[in-house]
Amino acid sequence: MSGSSNLVAMKKIVQQLRFEASINRVKVSQAAADLQQFCMQNALQDPLLTGVSSSTNPFRPQKVCSFL
Amino acid sequence: MGEMDTLKKEADGLKTQIETARKAVNDTTMAAVASGVAAAPRIQLKNRKTLKGHLAKIYGLHWSADNRHMVSASQDGKLLIWDTYTGNKVYAVPLKSSWVMSCSMAPSGNLVASGGLDNMCTIVNIKAASPKTIRELDAHEGYLSHSRFLNDSEILTASGDTTCCLWDLETGKQKVVYKSHVGDCMCLAMSPDQNTFISGACDSSAKLWDIRDGGCKQTFIGHTSDINAIAFFPSGTAIITGSDDCTLKMYDLRADQEVNGYQDAALNAGVTSVSLSSSGRLVFAGYDNFNCNIWDSLKAEKVGVLSGHDNRVSCIGVPDDGLGICTGSWDSFLKIWN
Image 1: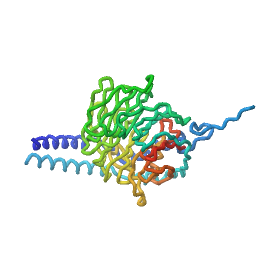
Image 2 (image 1 turned 135 degrees about the vertical axis):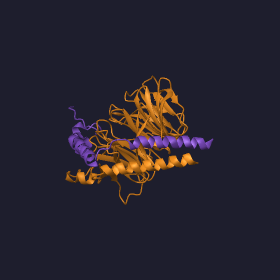
Image 3 (image 1 turned 30 degrees about the horizontal axis):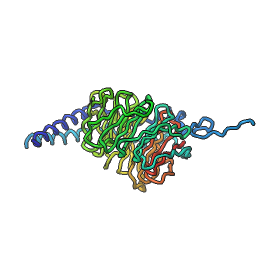
Image 4 (image 1 turned 180 degrees about the vertical axis):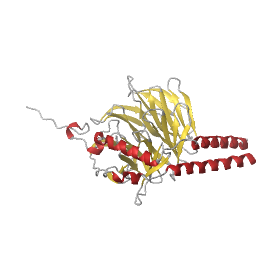
């Protein structure tokens, strides 16, 4: 019966919301500071941020010099 | 009638409780926290390679864990596996159904997966003498929008039937089904530690799931339309979503709420795809308006644009070593930038 299956679905929704309501939350100030710190700590190793030198760029076709 | 009403009241009460709890920890904004940090430089990336070979719209791409190979899927009915250093095609996998919506490669590089309007996820061994279909995962009741391998024996899928699923590739059967979304699931991403994954759906919400027990741990709301793209911030403690509402949002998992938004009044195009640079500072987002915008994840300012495609940017990806970014488009080309 669609009535009782709606009830079952609603019970699941309530159960899920109860679970989600119960979690611990960290302050945004702390969370944002941690995300910022992660960015700062890894900035120098981020090639798209700092640039890739042409000698180490795997996507850049290398011009080859050869002695004839 | 009585019990239903009681349950609805309880549900509304719980939603209010969650909102109140989120507000209680909302003691500042990301903009305020990031005000002390230097602005990210203007990012001007060059198109280093254009991969030509598909004959129709590209719908998906996925880098190999080796940072060099990549698989792409097109509605020309093919998966192509590329060597991005040379631009050569290494394998071509013909698909039974050309209505493909996504593709992925296993970390080992041995297997690729694809699926779409056929509601199936097809697994192909590309290291066999010639590419060989080893499994057709066939239990979803809606289109396959996304997939990601955990390893050579397990794969996660997202479907238009509103569920996500973990499959056992030895048996071809579903191991865990993730049910909670009330709209088509459009995208998924795995956490760096592979214990959880996130999904985005047409119900405008993103959900965090425990991979092993199938439970939904957190739900993130705020978008006002379909979430088409989702990615983890590299620390694993935040996620970025991209939506048809033309915005991207960053949700912090520990604060359980939105902490930053990326939008522009002039931008009138839905977000199709998202990927982050290796430090998480840069957010690359593909839009319906043929461009890819580059956002500073902390200050929420636009710091660059990748333009060059002649049609919608449908997919985007940064390899694990962070050395470049690839965009895939309905114009049938893939472009690599750095």
